[in-house]
Amino acid sequence: MLLEIDNITLLYGRIQALHGISMQVEQGEIVALIGANGAGKSTTMRAISGLRPIASGRIMFEGEDISNVRADLRVIRGISQSPEGRGVFPGMTVRENLDMGAYTRKDSAAIAQDLDRVMDLFPRLKERERQQGGTLSGGEQQMLAVGRALMSRPKLLLLDEPSMGLAPMLIQQIFTIITEINQQGTTVLVVEQNAQQALSRAHRAYVLETGNIVKSGTGPDLLHDPAVKAAYLGVA
Ligand code: ATP
Image (cartoon, rainbow, N blue to C red; front, side, top):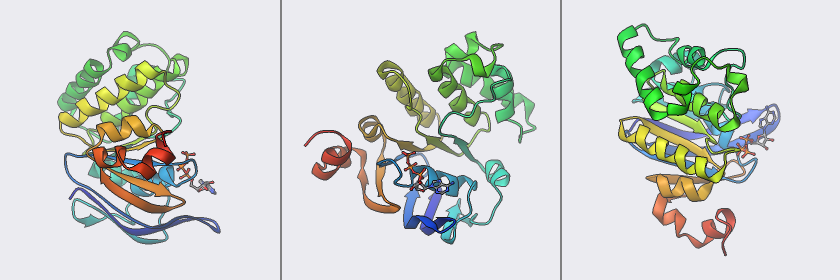
């Protein structure tokens, strides 16, 4: 088991956003986390990456308790997040943004290899290597955010709403790239509003409702689950 979340709770002041959720991600999987607005999807990602402390429960990574490990040290251990809303550095070029993704690493030969891999995955970024991040289109910024997260060579890639704001064709493309990244050996946990795409690409998925996991199963099982269809896939 790569990631094991055991009964975690998380508070924003007096507001309880997570009410004791448990989930697992196995090495090599794509796992999706779906749910409505405000369900706690981004909060779960922040708990895993260490951007918000949990109030109780435990987060295990590669068999070690990382619940109290600092966010930057979790990156070094192999957890990398591509945040919702993209978060590229607007005043830096595409190349500089990608270099920032590798800031915790010193293995320059392997960094160069990973840069080539990211450029292969996203030819659009290669064409725009010297362009400032802030001037990229929304879809290009999304690609850059994913590319930057990959530059830390993560064992676990956390993607928060990778399809947000993208045109339908680009949504397909970004999910195809996520599948490729996974096939190249990276385990992926993806949060998505686009449940259809996420469930059809994921090995397994969890459904989050108001801070609780209410359902889990294989991607295909949940795609065909009547309650999931009605609530998240827009079909009765
Ligand atoms: P969306 O799909 O809309 O992004 P989400 O499932 O990612 O939703 P979260 O962003 O995790 O939801 O929010 C979960 C709950 O926690 C919401 O009720 C939200 O209002 C609350 N929340 C999130 N961040 C904060 C914060 N910094 N302070 C107070 N409450 C917060």
